[in-house]
Amino acid sequence: MSAATMIKVCGLVDPTEMELLGATGVTHAGVWWEVPGSSRSLDTDGLRRMAVPGGPDGCLVTFSADVEGIADALAALGGSCVQLHAFQPPSAVAALRRRVPSTTRILKVLHVDRGRLLERPFVGAYTRAGVDAYVVDTIDGGRIGSTGVATDPGTLLAIGACLDRPFVVAGGVDASRAGELDAVRRHPGWHGIDVDSSARDEHGALDPARIDDLVAAWGAGSLVGAGAVPVAEPAA
Ligand SMILES: O=C(O)c1ccccc1NCC(=O)[C@H](O)[C@H](O)COP(=O)(O)O
Image (cartoon, rainbow, N blue to C red; front, side, top):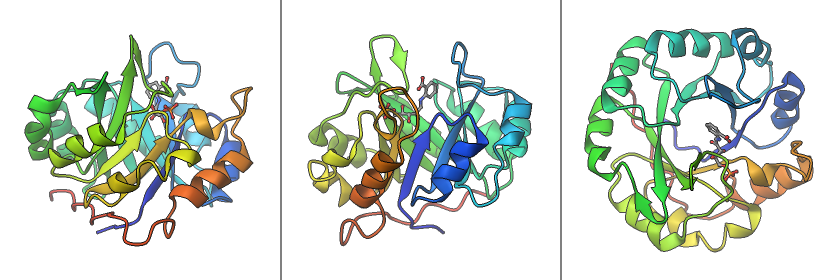
């Protein structure tokens, strides 16, 4: 069981970025694979280069539903979790659960479009399929991922109430929002944040000062009594 708050920074492409994050309180690095059209999406050799000693845990972020491909990519990255970021169905989650080691955590992204949780009817099926935690992220027009668009606290609380696994909040999260989301952070399902835009400078490079601010605002100990319920053990 792990009750640690997840502080995940997404879209890393270079081993030096893993080293940079290793010197912060960031717990997970999102590394993209099979994200069509993205210059940050790595091939297998690129994933292998990201396995840096002392770096944060690697999290494979993908649009793919190819279970064999995901298992191979995860092995190349040496990551502890996989984030299914597209609209992969519960059957793909179940197949992945059977295929990867029981210690691998499966995160399923749930998409919020103008306040509406698109996968609401399928949450039960995803949980039964073996999701360990959800990532609640925003859609902006046709854009999925790294939108920089925030979901309001009331909507997040309503979403948290219908989830039966821990949840990570993504979409427009920055250091300044920790206070605004205080009630969400006290929800028993609270499990942390997933960030891209606000961890970067105006040129798109990871910004150590901004990352330090994020960790100080959201990291373990930043809120006494924060939720962080134990993450469910994957089914054997
Ligand atoms: O950023 C993308 O284009 C992207 C594409 C495909 C899969 C995931 C992608 N981003 C992933 C993330 O998990 C981001 O951290 C998350 O969407 C939050 O982004 P931001 O609102 O910029 O903090």
